[in-house]
Image (tube, rainbow, N blue to C red; front, side, top):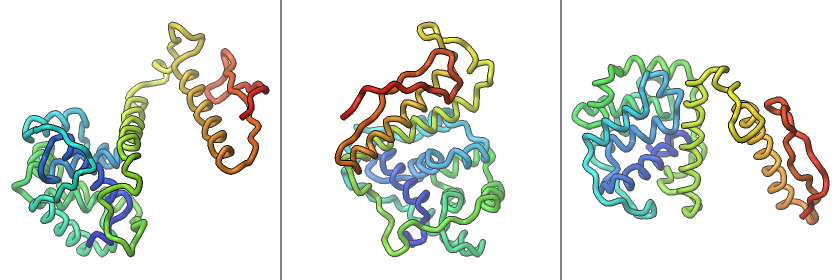
Length: 247
């Protein structure tokens, strides 16, 4: 069955595993899987009309918490979640779709009526029909590694935590920016001669410059680079470069 999971579905399992470790749970439960799914796909979260902070608060109120442990510890999948995976497989078959994606997994959770994830979704009016509408809008994705079982741990375990934090930060930043308008972005910063939007543009430019430096450092025997110097009052994507730095 796992060979049918898309890359997004596999990553959601990894995030669910991380959630289980944060809750100190002996099993990866349905509520951990729900958090993993919605963390992986903010588009699905918005389609279902789910508020992330409210969802997390409700789950924290219901799910027992114990001492956190390392994500390197092996955590088995609960019986309810195994049943949800089987239901997701049946849902994909019923829709004539080969691959199992996040929408199928969410329907699978809903169909296990007694699990916490189904109760949380049901209280928010999420129905199977609403999720199927999302599946019809999104083109079917193929699994990244069709010949391998779904990996529950990343290939580089030491990078798991920073990758998780970065993805979470990016998701939060996207939601925050979408919740604020142009007027908010035009406000000037107190300690810099830029607006919020201009400061964000400088951060993007600086990150792009560093990305180029890292790639060149890995591929070129001798690297000559230019330092980053943002100009005051530049456009959101505007930068000025000054020569003189090399490595």
